[in-house]
Amino acid sequence: MKTLTIDSKLFHKPGMRVDGAYHLSDGPLSRLALSHSPYESKTLSLCSNRIFSGNIFRRTYVESSEFGYPYLTGSDMVKADLDTGKFISKKYTSQKENLEIHKGWILVSCSGTLGNTVYTHEGFEGHIGTHDLIRIVPNGSEIKSGFLYAYLASKFGKALLVEGSYGGVVKHIEPHHIADLPVPVFPKPLEEQIHQLITEASGLRVGANELLENSRTTLLKEAGLSELSSDEYEFFGNHAASRKLSVSSILSSEIDSLTINAFNYSRRIKTLIERVKKANKSISLIKGLQEPGFFSTGSFPRVELDSPNAIQLINQTDIFNVRMVGKHISRRKVKTDKLVSYEEVLIAGVGTLGENETFCRTIFAGEELSGKLVSGEFIRMKTNDIIPPGYLYAWLSSDYGFRLIRSTQTGTKLCRPIQALLQEIPVPVLNETEMKKIDAMVKQAHTKRFQALEKENQAIAFVENEINSWQN
Image (cartoon, rainbow, N blue to C red):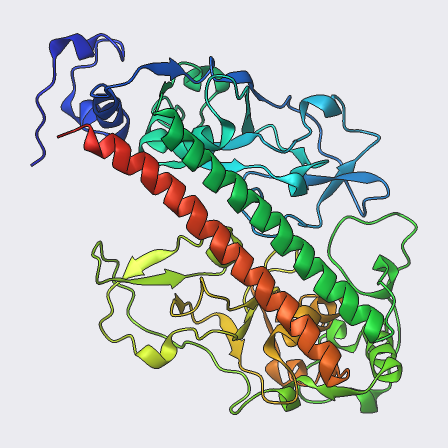
């Protein structure tokens, strides 16, 4: 049984609520913790130039950036890679200035999953955000923006953000619900230290994304491969009416017992494979892997456990996010050889064919993922001496690699790659110096992402430790 003694004056603040469950929930407990602050506090509205959500608008999706703005949903904003492939029409998107996202803002998810926060960097510039995002524009004069983000991302800030939620199945919060949220004023040296950590983390993430983009660009250039246009592969997204249907005939002798799925015999994909092989020396994917080739985590008991001895389990949704939250489960019957090792390459092995889905996307196991447990849906691999792991990741995460992986799929609602086809997709082999250069870029990028997360965690810990110290 949980108990708490409070001052009767606190009954008036939430509207005469006297039920114990409310006062024992995270929001009121956070307010109680903040009430012990030895410093003054300000409201969120006083620390911001503006708190707003975008206007509701008609979302008309288009094929490319030529006719559309890059678009972010609440689930997209927390991803490490903001290139989601979603574009909404420039022509039919009204009030763009009220929807566009700029760097130095704080975004808060306000529908469904509530209270997730993001500090925007240069990579967010020019993106259109869903109306289901609250935008906080810090003024920097009262409280530094990095500190404000760290506070809102802390357990205390998040509890207060979601305190005023409403709705049945789908919960919501509105900008006016959080305008009066209390923000403690820390001593200036501590505030500056926290702000600096957040801004450094933001810069590291920008650098990491640039390195990864450069690694793929360098690979294609050195391999003599041009950028792909959407007419050169099969896809399941919004496309122009002028796009030609993918119709072709093949000889019966070309069909084997492995598959009768027309998608696996795509002429467009066959043309891509021929282009890769003609442009440079190449090997099949399986020849660049250690024995046994592809492998998976397999099955294991998933007993959720709230304990420091629990092990973190990462699924396909969490693994692409800036912060891999996952679940914590019992270590019982989880063998250590099932844990991810540094430099592994993983493919999201189950999902649907939507252009924005994670199915068939590739992951490089950097410092953050090393030693974690991933679900059995991932196709995992380790490279041999022929192909460096970072280089393989750069290839498989490029447009060429992704489309070739997708071409091996089978299934209806939930699809999976046919591994016998997957192991035969071509991997260009460059000279050793170039491959090691690309490998180093990928590893450096993931190190930057890890360092960014460490700095952000440190900043949030400073906030939480300071507030906890007031309770003594």
